Image 1: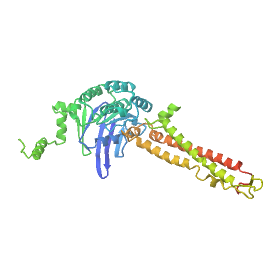
Image 2: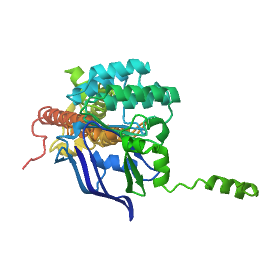
Image 3: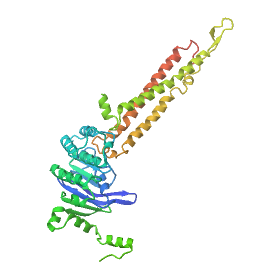
Image 4: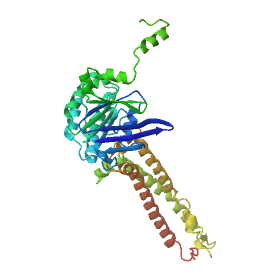
Length: 246
Length: 160
């Protein structure tokens, strides 16, 4: 279980995260949604111990330190691989540093994405870099896999295929926290959706319960964010000087 | 051993061999620069002699004394200080490397091995500093031996 208790992160005087409490049991595929600046990346960096914060973050009941942080992996759109190293070099590096690194999963996903093993990462296309970043996060052998906007720049077919692979390869003890804007795309694969707004959790929704209520995840998210459906019409009206059609 | 160093002592993707070759080249240049000690020494040693007007032979001047060792050494070993200073930039480059082209610092900072980042960033500069120190001490000793034993008897300054 990954547990956040009253986690607050201040950037200057502004709260990037404000008393966030959240529990992620093992074996869940959780979506983390919110507008730009909502605090999604900050939340993940707090969990990983990459930024200082107030409050408590417990990994299976213990604070996150270098002793247990191998149970956390991170794939980010900022990319955390080494541009001057080949994919094979990364494979060796991860095998040497993460005792539970899954060579089988690494090679399987490399094959799935048809990525070259012996080229340096700087020669990869933007989409390939994203794919490789995700491959590393999934192959590390972590129990909690944090993915921050991992598919930015990938084409739709690649993304859809990947969601299918992701949901089928996960072991029962593996939890994925997936931050993305592509709510509609991932809604079919998620079990739960956590909504962040202005550094606070404004919703923690079970996708199954939503389905039982006959509500779509996108609809529920819009409702929580008080989405104003008429704002497009108003904006167009204001920009073109024409009256909005009722 | 070489493979181990290549895989463990520099940031991933940075060649240990190439960096070591660079440091060694710097040390060789610093050692070559230090040879200017011999210019000072032999010039001072030559000044101990004067030419006999009758025989035209070089004879030791009366009360001739060689300048102090430190004076003759001057800045001969300065090259090693410069190299040591440049090694600080190598360390800075290694840290900056983790922010270039990606944010591999995010991976390095979450490794289970607590000091991996610092080991990889500081190993080559630290080894380079040790090399500088060892080479400078070795040359210092060598030059002192030359000063001590290649100087005509009685021409060394009073050490007391």
